[in-house]
Length: 461
Image (cartoon, rainbow, N blue to C red):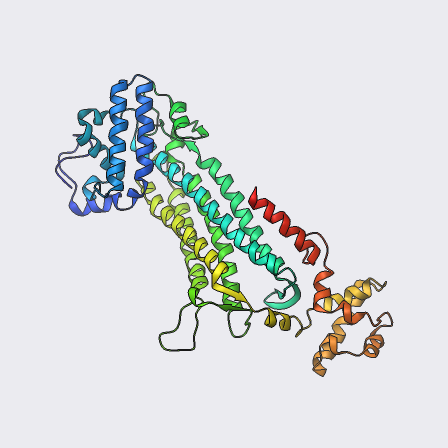
């Protein structure tokens, strides 16, 4: 640290250089500079509006802050560790530009409510960007789904073949997950968009400030009703990290499926060269690095959520230096979610191709139509549990004989139960198995087509 102190003359000497580095946050909170400048301009306008400073002084502060913004954009303002944090760096540079009037900017404000304001402005902006990326991701899912309404894919439970479904229906499941993510971020944004500016260090201020005025200038929906809560609250950050974690859960689940589908064991998709890498030693390999990285990066966001919860769990009111640790994890989570959404969107749009012939074969090589045999009997008056047990028996004998249900002769079906007729073969064909599931939200082609129309309308409005 330089000999000049950023705090009061209560201190007789500068920080130890190692402690100064340990204490400084300028290395990462420079991320907030645009928001700090915007918040400071609103604060300066309020000081002038309420007569705490003159109109001329307010204009000088606003103009000086805008000059700093331009200097930052041009790469001319790059504060180092001696500035401690972005807030002191801005104030110091402002004073160099406008003189002693710059020292008035911090009137009726603490770093505690200042950093809380900056962080909320930052997160509000980032949430909107993530919501836009979610919409793009959803749009790509719909683009693919609309081409594959009648493409069949094995559906799984317990990672065992269960029942065939429409590929579009499968992709629409991820659309709905992303829709919940989009709505959840909207809910979080409402609680992010509350202004702590004017709460001071913890107890408010003696100056006749107008907190509603600054809130309006900064497009906040409301202000904190309690100054202690305003400077120490990080619920909004935890809520965002929860929402971010769920976004990553959903991306990771899709990533895991793409990884499986691209394997030689499945062969459901082909990875294109633009979104795959090779092996340094095995020339035949094409590796699904994009979904693997998304799956791996999910843990980072989970970790940041856990870290934030641990930071907050034991903090007494009000502000504590521990809260400096809220930013790096928050910033990294935002960047990780945005990068993962972008990567998965590109992968879906141009990085993989569904192998429709292989999928058509896959739905004919198992017993995933067994439930439809039981349903066939139940529709003809046989109690479902009785039908279920009968079909279990025929599956067992068919496996022993090396046959599939489609291979059984009509006489074999009728030996099992006289209700079987020649239409059993149509009833258990993969296409009919899927088409027949026409209940609302089901995989039947009619329902999937309706769901696609509704989904497209949802993201277009």
